[in-house]
Length: 220
Image 1 (tube, helix red, strand yellow):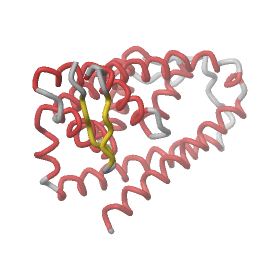
Image 2: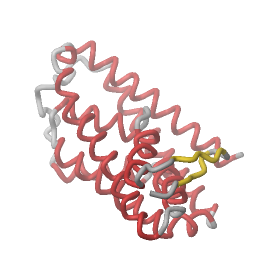
Image 3: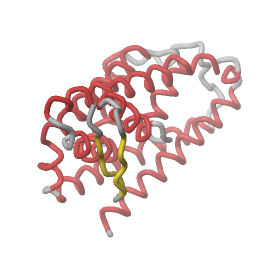
């Protein structure tokens, strides 16, 4: 098999005899495995065991659609619209700041939820709307999936692009499934209200830091 090459952060790496599927898998994992708003939300819902399957499926499908759109042409379209990037950044900052405030408020509450309980009583549609906001109002999602993965995947030969997308999508499924369903193994630790307070505090601070970073990008 001919050597495949791709460029990342200005460095050209030669990957001899590695299928496009593996390239998509490795690159997607490298981008998705990071502390962020979407991952924090999936982890919390996994700990609560609340609509985990629906959330994992939703996040994986969103990634698949965005990655495919990027590889097959949308990366060029978004790259030529800096105003759209700024609008998405501001909308995402507002959402993240609001959710961070709600998480920090929960730190002061004494009736903390236990992970074994689906105690929020929220409907599936409400939880999925939150997942949609974390996914689609986060500009980093578009930068990672549409622009970065899209531009790299678009460099593949036409007959290998589908395999690149498949590999990247598999990475998304594996990560979100592991994060959501694996969280329940932490249930004994999170049976203590103090543990929930720590999680909510970390989530709240993370949301605010991300919101400030997005605002910083817009005003620069």
